[in-house]
Length: 199
Image (cartoon, rainbow, N blue to C red; front, side, top):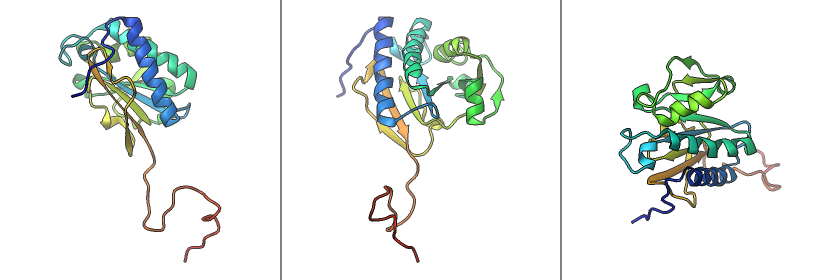
């Protein structure tokens, strides 16, 4: 059985854990200014309650601050998934909206309709707006909020060294292009394959 480690409700500790998880994911996936990292977070699960029942803005702030520090280091875009009451819409900045070529939708996430994490991000992100969906390059799911619908294909699971933040299980993934072709297909350029001819 998986052991819960690092159980702490201290906001500074949560910020540090999220920072470390995000750095591990960035190093594994190579996220940079061309990429989007989507976050799903149940602050209720972090404090040990059932998802959607005990939202905590202080926890949302701690998570946001940890992610923001890593974003400033690596320049990727952040996106935050809302809860089911806003159909899992996504909070992004207007700058990211232009980058992903998506259409803005109208709603203001609040803790009871959107979730504490999305509500915090909407109020503190520069020029925030909502989109119905995105295809992000990587994701961090804090508390099993199911972010898979917002990831590009093909998703590759990633297990960070910190598996829990508070009581919430951490699930991460990054994406890669689809591998296409048959028996002759190769996926890395080498001296041996650059001059081969195809009939």
